[in-house]
Picture 1 (cartoon, rainbow, N blue to C red):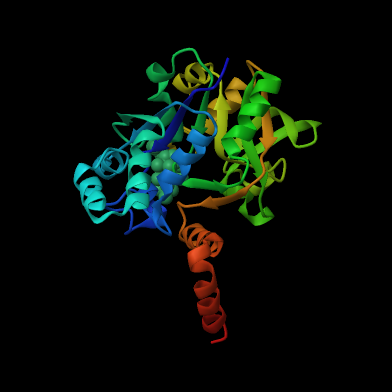
Picture 2: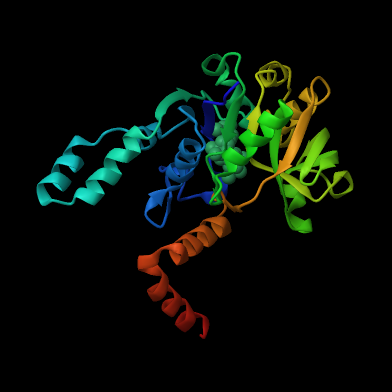
Length: 288
Ligand code: UTP
């Protein structure tokens, strides 16, 4: 069945990015001139997703306002003849259908996904974490959808990360079935060094079958006292086949200050208008 629905969890507290995330959701902090969440919604739309459910928490208004029409801004741009900007502003509110649901309390990523149960029903769906941006000419979600179509099973997006960073992510235990594809045996959230099975970290893109909701309902709070998606996926792997897929693309962790800075610099260096002046500035600054 075609994947047409996606869930974007964006209800976390963003404690690694305080105080910036105190009143503004970290998913709305910008990379150059666009909020993080817009890059993620654009990736979903470019991958053929038609309906997105954004899981929101506090400060929901900024997210809803951003993806809504803005008649006064549109009118002002039209009056000034700024037609390119007008088209861009309109595109944000028309590229895909966006729905919202509130996670009553930030009880963990697994709990946030569980809030999507009724919206999803009996279909497989995409998950795109609201603070993970992946730059790739072939959108990451499209890559995962193709893997889903081949294996007809849940697909967990993974990538190799530096050895010292493995303890920050879900870790994959499984054997390769082809280049870059692994049959999942188990997953461990934020492993202790002795629990690390592989160099592969679970990152922020997945295709999940609706079977995940039952295992989520049965998952108790785990690492950090949160209901962890990783634990529910590991339980699901005991019931149905799950595969991990090493996707291509440069991934940025927008939940961390370092990731935010790297994303801003690299996206600006990809921008024709900014590239030269930023290069010149960096060259001068780095000689200090
Ligand atoms: P993170 O664990 O990176 O987000 O979750 P966090 O909890 O906001 O981060 P810190 O550790 O406090 O800085 C990944 C994604 O899942 C969402 C977050 O908004 C983020 O986009 N999330 C997390 C929820 O929607 N609900 C939750 O209960 C937890």
